[in-house]
Image 1 (cartoon, helix red, strand yellow):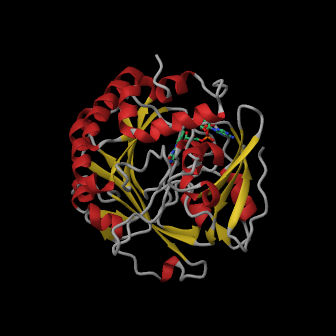
Image 2: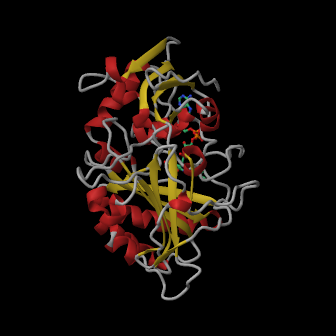
Image 3: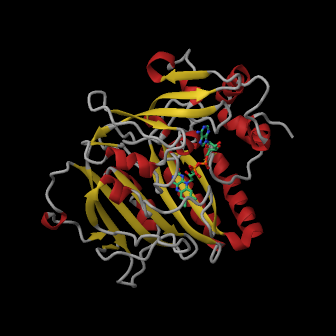
Amino acid sequence: MDWVSEPCVATKTIRVGGGATFTQLVQKLSGSGLALQNVPALPQFTVAGAVATGTHGSSGVDPVTGKAKLGSQASQVISIEMVVADGSIMEFSRKQHGGVDGEFEGTVVSMGCLGVVVSLTLELVPDFIVRQRVYVQWPHPAPSWSYRAIIDNFEELLTSCDSFSAFVDWPTQQAGMLVLRDFVEPRSAPLEAMLLPQEWHGGHLITEPLPPLLSAVDNAKPFRTTSQGPWHDVLFWYMEDLEAFGPQAPEELQFEWFVPLAAARPALEVVAETARGWAGLALYCELRAVRRDDLWLSPSTVDGCDSLAIAFGFDKHQEARAIAAAGSLEKQLGQFHARPHWGKLTSLSPIALRDLYGPALVKFKALCKKYDPPGKFRNRWANRFIFGEA
Ligand SMILES: Cc1cc2nc3c(=O)[nH]c(=O)nc-3n(C[C@H](O)[C@H](O)[C@H](O)COP(=O)(O)OP(=O)(O)OC[C@H]3O[C@@H](n4cnc5c(N)ncnc54)[C@H](O)[C@@H]3O)c2cc1C
């Protein structure tokens, strides 16, 4: 199932098999004049796996509308084809099966519970390049670049780019790194011709590449800092030919929560307070934004709104401490109706998940029963978290 069709220039779409990776998709798009709107950090994910879990990249916010510009991978799907329990192939398209009475919105983020996805059709955009600015504290160690720079200027951060990633070291209370990306036309002026702000509220613009972010992985590529290049070269942070290594990176335990973007500041204050004692435990924390969508189980649409994604990687060798720490933060973030990432760890109970998703989860369960009456595609995880069974 790891095939990718030729992109259709007229409709700006592409069809990919249920086992195809982003690497294969990018190869097919090369030279077509078309691009994916946005991507997650790793190109070796399968497109179907990313879509099924609501995986996402990041977004900025339109200063005029106040809305996030870019949605998750799942929000780019316009039709989905799957083999359901009785062996038949069903096609669900946004156009024909979408909307209030339709089922399309229930089939996209489905964690494999409805059937085997054999193909997905994605919408594309005209090719673009990414102009990326990276701000760090170093090489100027003092005065330290506090995380307050991120929280206090959060609205400015959101509206000053098309996509951002902010890394905060909560235990040392420092803003580790801020990545601001603008999506520009392929023939835009080279970076050297741009007058880039050398400072962002205490952070310094850096142009030298940094050591690979996934240091435990062989062949991980150095992290490119301030630079400009094709969308897939800049947006994917790791080597395109890197081997897949499963849902968790080798040395970390990943947790991620989505809170309403409008509640970003108070939610970050809670994170700052809770994560203060996590020195040596939290390997990193990345903040990103995601546009809302209408998919029933979209984790990144919280209370119907755009969200702030708060991702933590914890030291795998301190599992018990990591799980307890993440659990305490997850509990605190409950006041913002925080939703966990479907492809990462959570300590939430099935009852808490049921309350978070409300009628959408009820509709999804009914859809599963319709297309998979005998429960062929259910496993222990689905029985517990989707169907609420012990
Ligand atoms: C280092 C690292 C970085 C990450 N970065 C990000 C990031 O930037 N953004 C983000 O949101 N998440 C991120 N994640 C989480 C990641 O997106 C999820 O783990 C995602 O599921 C990985 O895709 P996969 O191809 O490994 O899917 P898998 O783990 O293989 O599958 C995920 C789910 O999709 C279902 N599925 C897969 N293929 C099919 C199919 N053909 N038919 C039906 N169901 C199917 C599976 O049953 C499973 O439930 C990261 C994880 C790691 C380890």
